[in-house]
Image (cartoon, rainbow, N blue to C red; front, side, top):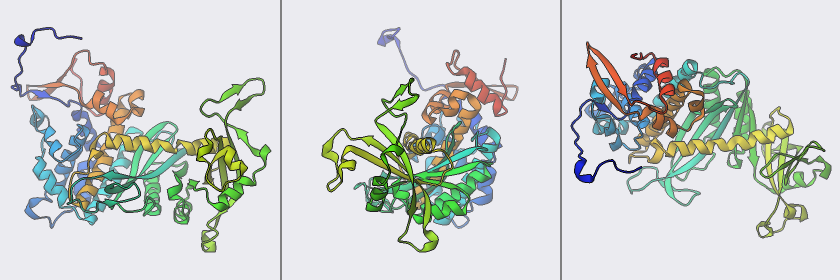
Length: 462
């Protein structure tokens, strides 16, 4: 590619009041309205005591924040992206960044919980409208994890140094996915930076299980987490709610003893990176093997918390003796071991493979940080907690847009959906009291955009 004219023959002028940079906001806002987001916010979020009118019109302010996040805004100032070109003709009720900042700073912790309730109800409506979790009648995987988001500035409430040694705020999310569906966020919580990874995890998992049941999930629910979340509280929360668990374990003395007792003929090779299928013997030739043994956890707790379930173990051959922990026996010098405590009903190989798929939540963290959660923009803790809730809501709405557009976009990254279906250059034309969105000719994703446009009740001009 090269310039078609010399620089002296090319000019720029910001003088067209009919252009939109984000034509895909039209079906997005329509979908949010169809699934009741403005009404849910009006019903549940009440900032009656907020000064200077900060609590007025929470529905319009929430919709403005979500629309800005769909357009890529990752700070309060970035919400000014909504005030360009013909957006004021295409939409009403948009608010200025200063107004939206005052709105967020008016939140207390109770108001954040109200907003979380509205977000859960909205996600439930999205699931019913868009089939957001296909396959939920068979199995739903709930993945929980936490991340420290680094922040800057001395005025950030709750910002402290945690286990990552960086100063930040610590948030948890729980995602729901199926073998057919990309993950959506069903619960989230912001904590101070020094909070432990698992603090409040049992309560958040219970909340997430209720949320996916409300979304129509009738199949098996399996909660997955890494070893930071291995606790009797998490296991008890899963069992009370009728869900199964799959939790990684740290390699403590009792676990190492259980692993060492596994007989050598109990190990099964699995498909793993660089594994080779032996057609003659009908098995995988691999440097990774799995086995299982019965295991009772939490024996140091009260009897009611002691849990007997399956201990799944994956072992992988060590390639570097320098990383062998001191004091380990010959078995642990030759292999690296990864243990999972689970009561899932799946066969050994499938159960171990399913647990490894817990890594999908790392992609959700990356997607959030690639959009609205690139920053926690306020100095006030509860404002950042509300921002986190709105970011998860925008993530789920983006997922719903992809589901309505095409099979490819249903599993595409939210950044891809924004680039191909939201950031669509548009010229707005008015004729006989109707608006026509004139989109780019030969847009590569025209078919997907048209499917999304019509699925949200908008019409095409032919």
